[in-house]
Image 1 (cartoon, rainbow, N blue to C red):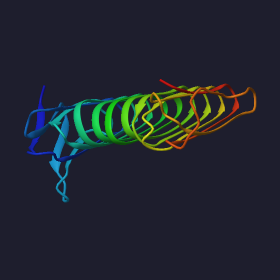
Image 2 (image 1 turned 90 degrees about the vertical axis):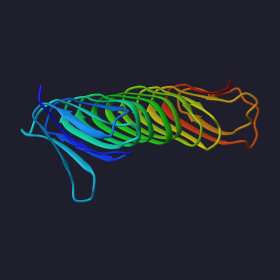
Image 3 (image 1 turned 180 degrees about the vertical axis):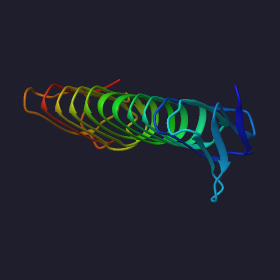
Length: 233
């Protein structure tokens, strides 16, 4: 299979787009950006590396240096980023998004699953239908229309909003926690011995708050229909 490459030592900015088709980006120990198949790789006027298919729609695999900042988008297709990245921006109208490790993530989908591994900084995730799973982040802002949200651990601030679906958050209590849903259960877990200031409201059942009240962090949870649980590990 033919390939196209541009020298890009260090941690370059890489921009990848295709009309439709899946994109797989692999960050590894190398000093260039290379794409397989009928794809053009070229240096942009601002110094970034641009990767575009020779035809408007094509799936592709792109390899880049570890720590690269990547902007990647497709109208229809899945996006998978393997390895360690800098700042990641990923957009698809129809398809899943998966990112292994990044300094920051901004991922948006119209319909599809979003899965993020480790995000040391800010993580912003949005999908209208599907599910969201975030394993760890410095802070998180999440919006979903219908589907489940699972935030395995967020050290700092959390904002999570859902129209329909359950939301589960493990918070490090280093920032405020705000969770809202129209229809669905909410579970917030805090560190041991945390004494939060909790404001919880459910129209369908009495919230369960199992932590001693205090001012260690602010927790605000609201749902129109569903149970609420705030507890300490």
